[in-house]
Image (tube, rainbow, N blue to C red; front, side, top):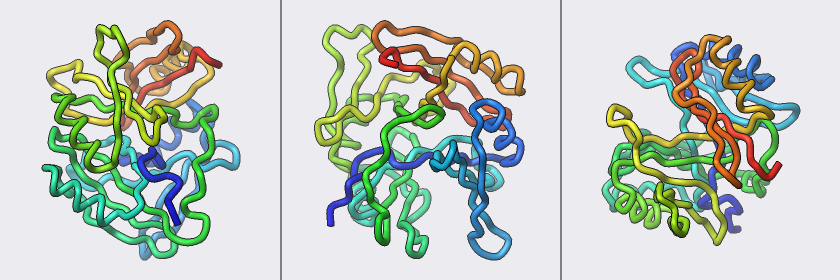
Length: 253
């Protein structure tokens, strides 16, 4: 059976040195609740929810691991995707690993240094189509890279993505496409001090108010709210443990 989510962003996972502190932050910012799932002796995995919908996962970061949001891309075959990563110059951070009756995943790094997860659903219903974007969920993912041309070739080979720059766009913003649909973006790194990374966008009702609230809750603002005509408004923020994400509201809503 074909995986309905192959080549799409299917999951977001927070790696945090203080998961409880981060949990309280997102609960206050966007109203997420959470549920801990046992994963073996002394281990658990945190599920973030908005209403009854699962939004993301969370784990305690290992010593030396950065506080960050990790984006996952769906795959027909996680092992084959990892083999393609190796073939085209990527690095394997976590080899293919099975969570019984749920999924098989891996974490890799593209040749420019951005980490991304690979996820293959297992079991009945594991590859059901992703639900549509909704308030307080992630709605977009964007690669910030040192070499757009090289990244375009890499992700095209690994996930089959195509894409293009919008006509006449002075920013040369790249739109990733999977099966003919826009799924994410890519742009050059804006800061010479930032490493290549994937930036997830979280829908909020009011970008200005939510950005101000980030400061009140002990987070940082890297980019104040900015409006883009016919696209929407966004800001780039950091939670109190150091994980960076964008807050976004579409102009179409």
